[in-house]
Length: 574
Image 1 (tube, one colour):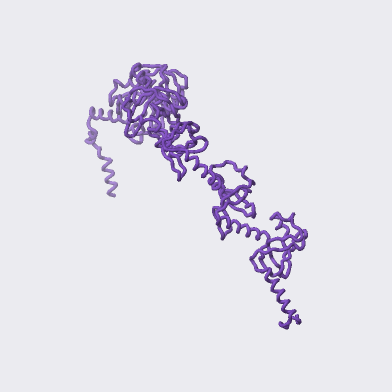
Image 2 (cartoon, rainbow, N blue to C red):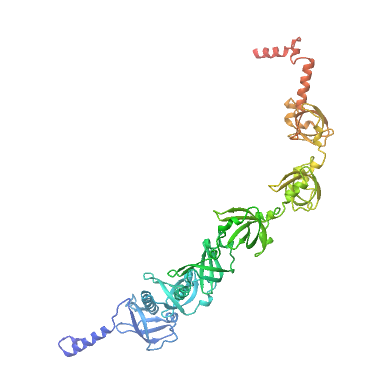
């Protein structure tokens, strides 16, 4: 380099000029994208020639494969790469083609976002919360939220995958390098222009024919009009009667005429009304009378009843409790169908609340009133067991559609009622006595034991403290079970009522079958209550003996009567 030491020589000046020109062509800086020429290709690596670097950068073939470039490259081709390191610890140059592509792709996304321009992309896969979209130009991956796929719910999006289409960039995070796109916004922008033209066709007061019920909401019902527009009928505009939810009076798929009552060109909304197509029926509600029968039309069937029309626009609820006198869980869906005309009685008219209540069962004879006239309390009737539970039977009386209630306690006087219940089954016929009829509560109670002689009548001529003879049936720790002679009923003598002396109050003194006397401690024929006591009989007999033979302390005047007491005192003094 000695020949260039003298700066005044023309050769050195020429060399300096050539060197400055070469350096100005390639500004070598880390973190910038530069172009390199393919100089050599092997099975694993591609070597690049980049002027200004002291060695040739190397790119892994697999990296080019991921970019889809490995099959097209040849010597002399140019590739854009990101210069990561001019020299690493091993003295090698580090470059990346994939990062260069990503950076240039991100720049294009930023430019499109700032200009509010749509981009071309395709959905390549699903992910949690949405889909992954690939930018067609740069291959950058973007997120498409599920709510931004379409303007209406889609159960299946398989027809959209790998299809080139436009997307709107709705969010860019430059720090994290994330992009969020929307397909819905593209669709809506086209529809918005079309919808504005459609809404221009409608004016307040127009009548829309045969609009189809499309869906419900808590505030109203949506109708599809002429296959081009969805309109809202507010809850208060459905009917003059009170409506809690549109499904009470409207069915999906039904068609109704609508009246346009509002047009909002800014929000692109059209409001309609059903009830304004007919006059307000509550203005002449006085034409209807309470407790009078009218023909009504079934317009909607529900689990809890049916909605019926007295006239167009005047809808009323026929509750399931007013369908039948006898069937408790009757379904309106089984009794009627939409369009049926049935007789009903108006039971309530509330003009302030705009409510009319009706009843279907009032148009029929009340079977409970018929039963009460035909079988007053005390009558004997024959019935068939139609149902049974753990504590009662239900009997169908003659041809009346009524079930009479028979409690197990009214089956027999002698045995336990619940045990006696097991002797009866469905289909058995019984002759019973009518015990109670409550028409207002729709209740009839009958009894079987009331048709038989009452063994309790055995006590009719008995009195309190009277002595009777009983037979021991069984014993237990609680006392004795006994049966009076000539009576068919069993009674309990409690352990405390067996004897005056507690040491003698032992049920085990009897084994069963013995006869003994006891006294009636209490008797109540109305409550069918009897209390028996051996102890009471001993007290009565003791009193009679004292009254007859003297006082309890009469023997104390005899000689040596106090000898035991004197001996006891003598012992205590010692």
